[in-house]
Length: 177
Image (tube, rainbow, N blue to C red; front, side):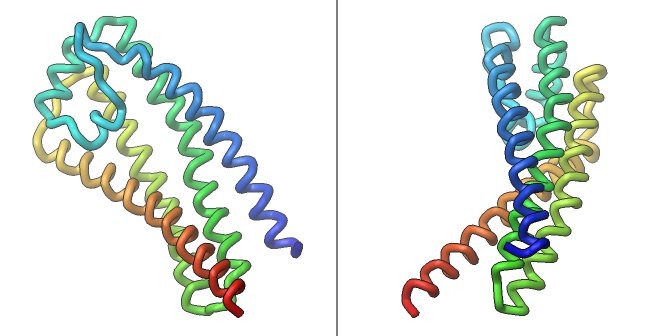
């Protein structure tokens, strides 16, 4: 194993541990996401709920749930510190193992794009924390928020998918030769 691969493997394992630990905590916290009789989800807040539902939901939260949601959003910052560097390191591990110059360049670009996805996730959390304190959301801000959310999801999922496809075809190619 060369030095570059060793570095990326260590970063990946550290990131994976941080990702799994924070994901477990956040999943545990989500059990308390109730607004009266209505259950809500983070994925709903991020992607599916319209602006009016988020405003109504945030206005109806009791102090306990508001505090728990705030904790979840702060845990998400630690989650991000595991997720995006983890995806970047996965891209770099795959890049080191690839012999194709175009794929190598693609993986480098996808690895660097994780910084943009991370920034989008930070923006998303700042908006949610702001709206949690003061649930007034104008249409243009909400549109930008959704743009940031969708962009970070596409980049992150795209990075994992890209690595998985390249790794899978690399394995298939090495078995057939």
